[in-house]
Image (cartoon, rainbow, N blue to C red; front, side, top):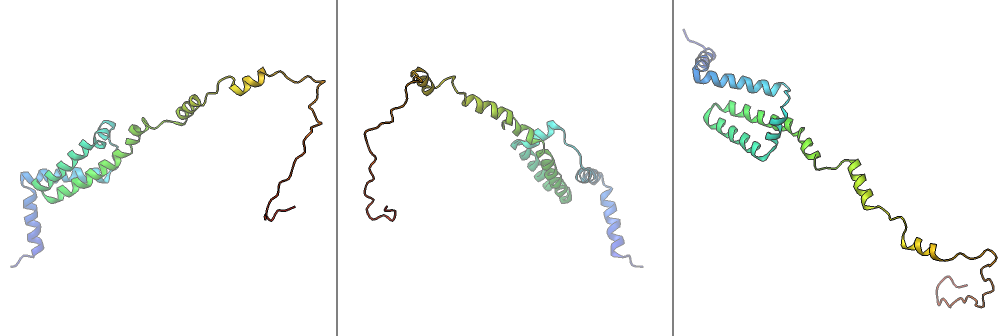
Length: 159
C-alpha cells in the first residue's frame, strides 16, 4: 500500500514541529503573528527607543540574527513586526518634534517682541517740537513762480 506524498509531508512536518527547538520557533512565530494582526499600542518609552537610530539598528540586527539562526519564516515575520513597530511608533514621534516647533502663541509673542514700537519715533518728536501755525495766518498763496512744461521730444504724449 502506497502513502500519498501529502500525508508523508504532514507526518514529517508534524514530527519536525514537535521537536523542542522548533516548538519555541512556533510559539515565537505565533506571538509575532499576533502582534502583526492585532493593532497593539506601543508604550511611549518603547516608542521613543524605537524612533532613535540606535533602536532601529538593534531591530535590524535582531532581524538578521533571526534570519541566520532560526527558520527563515521567523525572520520574515520579525522583519514585518519590526516594520509595524517602527510605523506605529512614528506616530508618537510627533511629540518629540513638537518640542522644537513653536506653537502659534509662542510665534506671535516672539514676533510681537521683535516689532515693539517705541512710544514715539523721531518723526513724531520733530512734529511735536515744531510750533503750529497760528489760525489767523494762512499759507502764502501768492507764489511768484509758474510751472514750466518741458519739451517731451518725440514722445506720443505731446500736448
